[in-house]
Structure formats: C-alpha cells, structure tokens
Image (cartoon, rainbow, N blue to C red; front, side):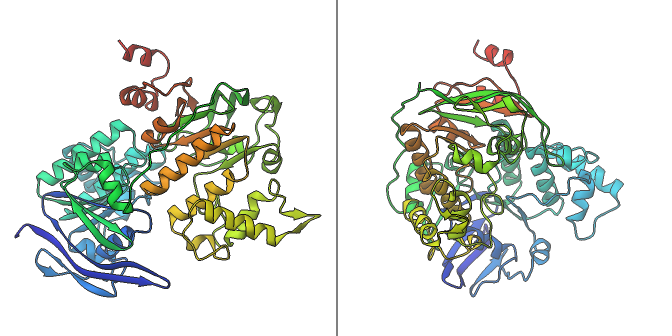
Amino acid sequence: MSDVLLAIRGLTKAYPGVIANSDVSFDIRSASVHALLGENGAGKSTLVKTIYGLVRPDVGTMALGGRPYAPPEPRAARAAGVAMVFQHFSLFDALDVAENIALGMENPPPLRDLAARITEVSHEYGLPLDPRRSVGDLSAGERQRVEIIRCLLQSPRLLIMDEPTSVLTPQEVEILFRTLRQLRDEGMAILYISHKLEEIRALCEEATILRGGRVVATCDPRVTSARRMAEMMVGGTLRTPARTSVGGGEVVLEVASLTASSPRLHGTALRDVTFSVSRGEVLGIGGVAGNGQDELLLALSGEMRTAPGMVRLKGEPVGTCRPSERRARGLLCAPEERNGHASAPDMTLTENAFLTGRVREGLARRGLVNWGAATRFAERIIQSFDVRTPGPGVAARSLSGGNLQKFVIGREILQRPEVLVVNQPTWGVDAAAAAAIRQALLDLASQGAAVVVVSQDLDELMEISDRFAALNEGRLSPARPARGLSVEEIGLLLGGAHGMEVAHAHH
C-alpha cells in the first residue's frame, strides 16, 4: 500500500499505575479521513500527543511518508507536516485574528502579507475570516476557524482534529465537514477524534477503535451502525436511556425576566430570561458555547446574585441567597468546568464530596468535619457512578476527565436535589458513561425532581428533555415540547431565530 502516510507500529506508553497505550499499530492513509474512537481513558489523547510530539513513547516506532518519524516536540512535528487543532482553543481574546495566527507560526511573514494570506486561504477553504477582527468578538465556530487556518498555512500532510464539533451549531458542523472533505480530496490525511458517532459515519472512511489502551477493532464507519461502534468501544451492549415521565407536577423553579450583566470580561449578559420547571420534568436548554450558559448557571447556583424576584424556588425568592442556602433548600448545580469550578483539583475526592455535600449530607457538626461520613459519601459516589479511581483519597486532578465528570455529577444527584441544574453533563464523556449519566438524570426526574440540563449536545437534549429552549446571546427562546422538533428548527433557534421565524419554518 503506497498511499500510507503515517505508519504506527507497536506504540506503548505507560504512566505510574496505568498503561495509556499498549502495542498500538495502525496506518493512516493520504487523502482519507480516519476516525480514532474509544471511551474516556482508552488512550486516544496519549496517542495523538505522541504523533504531535508532546509525548515520547516507551516502545514502538512511527514512519511518516516512508521515513522514520519520532518528533521530540510539536515544532518538529509541524516541520514534518503534522498539524493539530485542539479541543480547547489557545487564543488571545484581546488580539485580532492575524496577530493570533502569527503567534502560532515559527517565522511569520509581515502582518500585512499574513492578513492577505489569511483572507485568501480562508475563502479558498470555505471558512471566511476577517484578519482584523478581535478574537474576543468571535463565536466558537469562528474561533475554531482561526485554529484551522493557522494549521492550513503550514500546508500540513496530516491534520489531527480533537473533538472539533463539540462547540458548533449543526450549520457550522456542515461548513466544517465541507472543508475537511475538500482537504481530503486535495490529498491531505485527517485524523478525527469524536464521541459523536453519526458524525464519524458521515465523514470518515476508516475507524480505529481503542479500548484500554489497545486497538480492539477497525471498521468502515460508512457501513457500520453507530450502535455497533459504541459496542466495540465498550466491549458490551449499550442500554438506551428509558424514562417514565411524571411531568405536570407543581412548578418548583421559576425564573422571571432574569437580566444580569456578566461578571466575566468578554462574558455574555443575560437578557430577560424567563422559564419554569415542574417536578418530574427535564427542561433542556441548548446553545452554542458563549451565549450565556455560564452566566445562567452562576445566577441559579447563587455564585452571582440577582434582583430579588427573578429566581424563585418553591415560590420563595432566592435571588439574594448564597449557594449554601440554596443547597439547603434543595437547589443544586453542577457547572461545566469540572476542573477548578466543580472540583478543587488538588483536593481529594473525599474533600470534594464534602465541599458540596456538607449541608445536605450532614457532614459537619458544630463546625467540625465528620471525615468518616465524608469518606463514605465519596465511596458511595464512586460506586454508584462507576468512577474509575484507586479510592476516595486521591486528588481530583488524577482522574481522567470523564471519570471526574461522573464524580461531580454523581455527587449532586446523590444529594436528592429538588431542583438540579447541570451544564454539559456528559461533555467529553464516552458513550457508555454518557448513557449512564443521562439515565441517572432521567431517574432523578422520575423520582419527582425538576431537572434543567444545559448542553451543546443536541442529540442528548432531544433524548432526555420534555421541553426544549435555546439560549442565544443571553436571550432564551420560549420552551417548546421536545418531541417532534426537527434539527433544522433547533438550528434556527440556536442561531437566534426567535418567535416568528421559527413559526414560518413550519410552512
């Protein structure tokens, strides 16, 4: 096979207590889109970091274009023609597009010449960018364009994309896929990592599936069902979340004309947000990142105070209550940023369980911590939510992202909230763990809690929501029954077509 661009043979990488990659071998061909699939902790990140020169393997070899390839650092990988677009964008909000791209290049041309190249290349690949715009004003999709164009200016032979669509609207995903297909047709190889299996089926010709650090299967996603791929990833059968709807109970959480400026620089103000949630109901709130999700969570959790009547819990105004008071009354929140916001990375799981469980689980008496009870609470979370960890005494930062996610969501659910608000509950979590978290949220609702799920994953929202509303630039569309909403309608709502336009979309 002469069209193999990158040949990977026997890569092994071990860290204390965990083998991240074990004897991994596969080929990536030129002019193809190759998917890399696997659950959290399957070893995908370590593998791509090895290809990009961020990690040195213990054993094994790579060949790029028939020549031995062992990049000691990303600069060497880029020089050899390997580029990577990361899941977390590394951009400076205060600088413009051209300045950001210049910072990512080894020896950038003069800014004027660079700006002309950016305009030219971005239009050529259907991702138009204005080099003079400030990055702080760009949407998530436009920020991603900056990263992609930065890569394309290096004319790479291999482009690695890590979860590239997690922050895009359906319409932006279409544009991205068009560009990736164009790059493939021009001969580029693309290694594509995503948990979204229908996307993989639409885009990729080959898939390599990792489980526990090993290659366990390869398949052609165009002819393999999403369910079959998910089962190969977990090595078992998948349960689809099932629910017994008990909606129509009393309204527990009421938000009326919630208007508040953002505490963050470049944040999004909330404008006249109104909604209510009843016992036994799941309200899904969709939206592309940066449209006020974080601010909405801060306003509901009590980290950001609001005018008295804007947030009511069981009829009582709680807008001026602190987070601990709201918890005591049954309103619990799990924010999106699991490392640093939902958990303190250097504290143990027991300490992190105590941080939010103190009030409802009675983990302190007369100002003294009951460490035995806190440890038992942490152990219950670990067991109930299948958190892979040596035990409750380890630091939160030692867990993989997906396992820490299971821990911080489980910690809130086990406190039997009357209202639970979660932001991105399954972000970066593999298919099996995501199904388990969604099922736990549905179970919580069927026990009579009111659940608000804020998410950028539309499939997730359609699967578990009774009603759906979209957040766009700090405004919330009226909630509508989730059954029967089409992807097009949802896309319009996310893009900000409120009220009339959506009504017209029916005809």
